[in-house]
Length: 511
Image 1 (cartoon, one colour):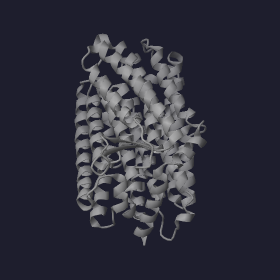
Image 2: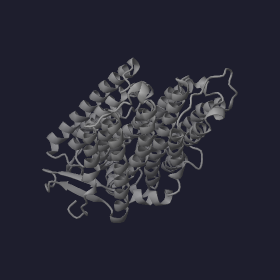
Image 3: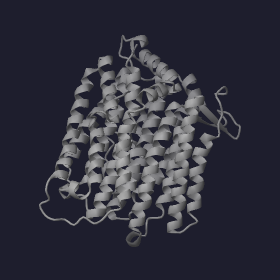
Image 4: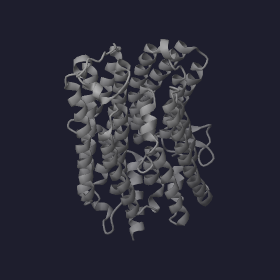
């Protein structure tokens, strides 16, 4: 770490949103919105500049207070962290613009929900801090900040349904946090360090390490709503305000996945076995089928999108069995690792853009009609063409049709599946895509169908529709730099040393 270039960007990416979140608390409703939106725009700009710096200089670090690990706190921004921070910036800035206009349009009747802005900025700071953290306890602190802000945002409307769903979300988040913290305590007690780099070097296989892997994975699965711990996600996401639903689905659940990916690849390689990879892959496979089927059965648009998130997160879990070698397979012949790695990151990005667009579109429909029953989508094309187009484009990416980011994710996942010889995952990927196509085409069929009864469509600001459409287009535009992004991701330390560690650990465990 000492040889890596230092930069102020990691500290600024956390400090700037915290500063504006705190400042916004001193203003009234419109002042909060203006300060909050300014902070969001500046944070997004800083994130993109930091992304460019990593592309030019490679991994950069910032040592807080000049104290190096294990005593001090080190922030590390490598290729993987830069991609997640950049994705959060792009998705977050469009959600922020949407929220500013959305709350302003409802200010007379709802008061504009001014607390949204400090909560969202604290949440953004927590996400950036999580992506930059290189310490198990700092990861715990940041995921707690994210969880507290996310629950507060989920109940912001004050409606009974949102409060009940928020309480369930809070209990699930606390349970996941306690499981994670218990695993951290076990690791600290056995190694005396919490730094990820040092842990990867000193951690040895044994009962304590295996149990720590188990409880940490369990806690993170609860937080990311991985099957069968997804019970809190559909009600929490569907009952929240539209901008909040978009944040929760597109960004918040990705934080737990990011930690799980880093820990499996950088820390727990010595304890991973082929069976462990297959087990977490099985959970992902069931999530894909179950979540897609539940989405197909819903009559509310937001519930369809919420259950769809359970399925799309299942694809992320299905990359883990591809990263651990089967018995008798050598590291030199594991040429599918790059495909699995790319599939996971592209699934994260395409899902973030598409799902944010879907939830924002649902918010537009609720604003226009007062509800989101799917039967009300009839003749949507005749009244709100831009929103109908956004739903169609986002749906195509969720299905995985070319030339979307979802297509690259599923194509690379299938490539990794067949190259690794784990063909039994392929029917799940294809079946999930077919089920997704079922509910997406059902929505589009209704959008083009003539209305049975004339339902009054109230006017909605066009800027809201444009934000939803631009996010949907983002799920396609991420295809354009695909070659560059794949090379950039493969230059990450986690793909180099992390892949080597997980391959060697899996091979040792299989022996």
